[in-house]
Length: 236
Length: 236
DNA sequence: GTCCATTTGTGCGTATGTATT
DNA sequence: GAATACATACGCACAAATGGA
Image 1: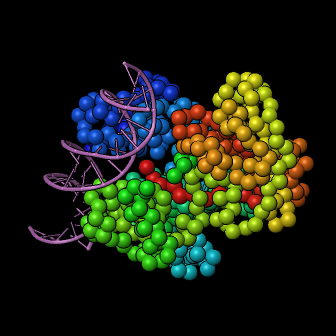
Image 2 (image 1 turned 180 degrees about the horizontal axis):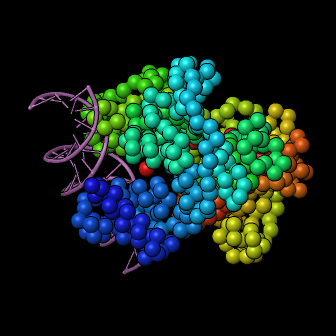
Image 3 (image 1 turned 90 degrees about the vertical axis):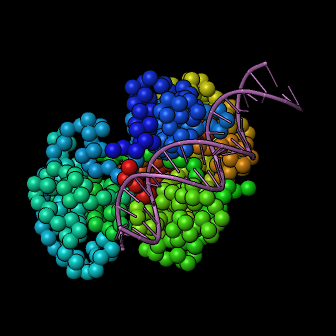
């Protein structure tokens, strides 16, 4: 059962995405929304605040709330996005091939990245993403085995996140993400079609469960020309 | 005058940053905070929700709210950040030199980037940022002259954002930000110390005022090895 | 400039639901 | 089951910004 403010929010998103409430137009006032959805002021305000956070509208004190140009939404993908989700939004085809999958004991450096003690058992997975006939992304995932048990090659070929969230029923809450550019590693040269470039973009993900324990460290290493990142930043 | 929930939020941030409330520790419950600050439930909840959004704490239903490791905060700089602010956080020295500053009429492509009609008058500014004796960032700013009047070389040498926000008293509300990697342009070769690299990281900013009008388009073009981006992404 | 209606922003109080211990 | 803590939802009052009469 969705909460009331979530329902209101989803309905408003529908209106905006279907173009019923157009770019730049004023959406109904809080009082009007209260009537439309038979909800209290606090409830509609929560829905509307979330819409603003997600970049659908801009509220202006004393005037109202206005729809922001749709283009902004289509291009932005904030939040934690796995490769599959991100690619579906761009509607490109791709294939995943698992190059390595095995358990290992964490050395000191790896343990630090995962916030665990050295020698903790990990699952290491290396996968290559092939788009338009070229190997362009190398994903290196490391999971804490105790927290994410039962990983298989089959799961790695599909969506590990779907397995974690739906099968294991773990709740992912947030990720710290770092993006930088590094010289190519041996793995990069071996697995990727580099087109002569000497560098790759590296997206590092430190992912945490609802209770604050880190369960994953991932590096997505991709060819410079395949990297694209977009988000919306709001001023305090 | 700061609002009550902002005061509560700031005080809690103080506690966390000064280490009084340590990493992983439980902060006082909502009921306790109500007593401590003589505030209503809704008010303390708003403060606590904002703290979670900003990555200071993690709330867990039925258990409490817990401080997230400080390292996460120090490294992340979400939000709209000008070069000056971003660098101060890393405590590195830098100098800015203005290479070009003049008015021009927008051509068709530029007009599209700024969401204005062709031939609209713009202010173009090119600045080079020098860090540790090397020219590593080329900032190209384009402002809509009507919206941001009175730009001078002196302002460009310091902080344009401070001028816009404090002198012109305009309210910046959000920015759409795109990050990608491009081959070096003529300008890059001329102004930057490229160390033989053939590519630069380009951070594009489309910045909007409180009323939804775009007033700026900026490209920050930087050497691959000087690029670093970090944020915290929360699940839904 | 003043007054007024509208609209969002802040703050209070209360009740009930749900998760954890 | 009981106690505690966060989540949702309702209602009310007043402040602050906007825009038109």
